[in-house]
Amino acid sequence: MYNKIYIALLAVFLLAGCKKDPALVGPTDKVSTSSLPKNLDELNTVLAPAYGNLKSIGLYGFELMPKALENSVHAGDSNYNGDAGWNEMTANNLSTTNSRSTNAWAALYAGVTTCNATLAAADFFEATYASSGQKADIDAIRGQAKFMRAFYYMQLETFFGEAYIKTGGVNENKMGVPLFKEIPKNLEATQQPRATTKAVWDFIKQDLSEAAVLLDNKVWPAAEIGRATEWSAKALLGKAYVFTEDWTNAKTTLLDVINNSGKSLMPFDKYKNAFNGIIANEFNEESLFEMNVDADNKGNYGPWGSIPNASTLNGIIWSPYILSEAGTETGSRPLGYGGNLGVHDKNITRFGYPLGYYTLVANPAFDNTKPASFSNPAQIMDPVYRAQAEAVRTNKTADPRLYVNLVQPWIDVLNTDWNGGAKQNVPVSKPDYLAGEPNTYGWGFRKYAAIDYHINAVNYDKWNWYFLRLADVYLLYAEASIGSGDAATGLEYINKVHRRAYNLPVNVASARDYTSLTAATPAINDAVLGNSPLRYERWAEFFHEGQWWFDVCRWRLGPQEAAFYGKARNLTTPLTFNENKSYAWPIPQDEFNANAKIAGQQNPGY
Image 1 (cartoon, rainbow, N blue to C red):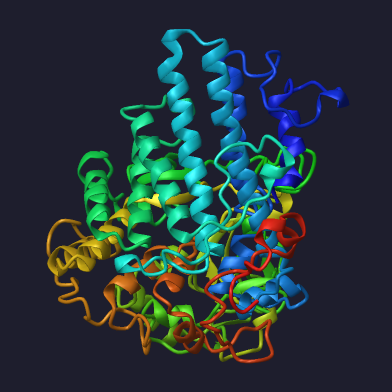
Image 2: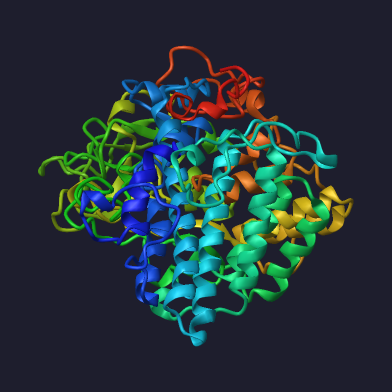
């Protein structure tokens, strides 16, 4: 991996930055005195790709969520089976050449590279050009680079590491990922064996601890609000402690964020619309780190084209459907690229929706003097069912986060355009490929989905992506409290998140509170989440945010999850999960071809 990007990196940073002379592109042990950076603006230019890389095709620009994680955890149910890598993700049975995992590996290490380049550039600038008064600004850039490097390594380790560290140091000597702590100075340095899991996690924690110090009290102006902060670093550090079951340090670190960051859970009225591109909701009181996404593809097809990583394009795959022009489910229209990925029906009851499937009946208000249309449909949802469904919503019989995350056919109405036309209020529909299948719910995604525009007409997402929210900190703190024997505190922080979901005062006990750590949750007939408030709240709160896979793996819930979901549309056989293999993605074959020092270090089962 590293030797593939090594020469390019030296060309961009070490050897005069913008110069194109081929003679300047080659290994060196020293930074050229004629190279970047010569001022803080140029140093920030070196840092910028550390953030921008998050939007790469292999990561959150496109592939990682809709084609990997949403299928791995079955939030999505793929209707398309013509993509082998996608199918492998659904089956949790990857090959060493799986394109999704391979591309994620390469993109994550590209992120590490940009961070290492920034740290080297900071040292060079401070030693060569900086004034003494620029020390604090340089350190703030170092802090961001260390935070981002830890972020990339944490993703690498949780996807590709052999096992999570458990209480008492269990699994500390399992295989982690190769560590590159600086820019390789020669090709030999690009060859690194897999470090131990302990070494990787220790490096992540060290980077985050140092980032928090370097960013201490740094407040970014409005134009730079998306940058990492001290509290971003401490929140991710607390998460790293929880993921390695270091409960003592986790509690201390996370409580610091809770008490001193100035963050609070956003009110439900904001929360329900916080994932759909409303600018006023970005970088809000709950957000600790989010990816800034510009609603502008700069002439590209999302992350592809002459300006890579200009925007993201996840929503083109998981777009909801609206009724056809004729008001039918047959021929219903996706607000993105249709026929790919819908919502797995089992998620509907998992949120506590108690009703079965609906049927269509003749519309008693149909005006046969006018053509059938979405405002004058010949058939509608059975009115009796509709009344029951509306009562579920009004009475909060189901978890209200169901409606934050998903849209319901016939009941939800989207004010949207169609291929760039005028906006119209159109009811949500089942996907056209489910039309005529009565034993399906056919709900669509709402969170991180195009609900007020046709994404295929503009080729970009318009919502920022949350990586760290205070709700995550609360539930991590709850887990750390429970892990250290303080069940009462753990239960209270679980209930704080639960109360917000029901639009209740966060810090006041309510009739909806869980009364124990094994109390019944909204999940119906669910052996995994039905009596585990901690598990349920993490699943429900971060549904469709790319978090659940890590919980499935560290809690080893794979077989139970496969049994719960049962099947997927893009597979011909029932879902299964191999506990001896599937919790860790395979080290890509490309890495074995490029890195001789990991020979014999593949994850078990591959």
